[in-house]
Each structure stands twice: as structure tokens, then as C-alpha cells.
Length: 208
Image (cartoon, rainbow, N blue to C red; front, side):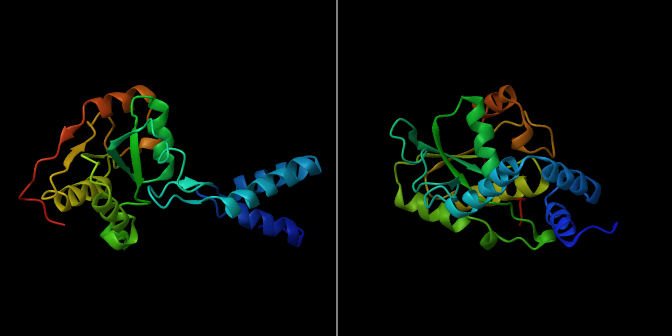
């Protein structure tokens, strides 16, 4: 790296830790921030500080929120019999954009991946099971895990755990390209995937 003032180098290094940001992009972002008026740069810093200070996990759905319970969980107009299980908070925003779902959510914050040393204990699966026990009004769980190897395996794992509970377990239709994430799907694709969800059948050949 070129010789920069320590404060500049520190900012570049911090920006370079963001996902998808390489060293050159980090440098460009750094110089852009430094070129902006003080109030604009300080507003960015304050927005980061405020988000880190105020945003927490909703104790019910594990989504990011600045209130607990979050607005979706506390909304009496939502269908509290439907629970859509997702991998990441960004997936909630993706489903909401489709405007075709009015139930509740549960965010796992990941997918089971033995190759990456991520087990069932490392995601919000225990919280999901406890929630289902505490809320018998939930009659259907919609598994909307990403269409990846890890997402499919996690969906099947959850389906197997819920098999004897009497809860209807469905999987969103595969209108999503294989290996894709919900976050980047368009509204129409997500709406069709939700509408075409199918009940998951037990697969005796599945082992995890």
C-alpha cells in the first residue's frame, strides 16, 4: 500500500474489511469521504454509531430492529398463523417488497454448513423451536432458505425436526435460480415462489 497518513491508512483498512470491498475500492471510498463537507462525513459516522447503538435483535423473530418486539411481530393485522423462515435480515426486506406475504418471520442468521464449521447451534434454530412451542397459533412454517446447497440442507433439517409437530411445513417454489439468494431476487419472482410453495415430504434418503 502507498504511504498514507496514519489516519488515512486506518480508514482504508477499516473500509477494506467490508464484504466485497477490495483495497482499491476502499481507497476510493476513503478519498470520497474525506472530500465531502465535514457535516456529511460526520453524519455518516453518526449513522453508523446510532445503528450499532440502537439496533438489536427482536426477541421474537431475531430480525434487526430498534424496538422490541419489532413492528412486524407486534402488528395485529399480520397473519400470526404463518411463519416464514429466512436466512438473513436482508431477506425479510426482499419478501416485504413482493407485497404478497402478510405473515410473520423468523431469521436464522445463517445456514448449516459443516464445511464452514456452522452447526445448528450456530444459527437461530433453537429460538425457532422455542417460538413454535410458545405460539400454538402458528399452523404453517414456510421455509424460504436460499436456493444453495447449505440452504436446501438447512430447510430439510428443519422440516425433519418439525415432522411430528403437526405444523404444516412448506418450501417456497423453486422459481429462484439454483445457488441464488433471496436478497437479489425481484418482487415478481418472490411472489410466485411464495404462491407456489409446496408441502415438504419426508425424504428417507436424506442424511445430515
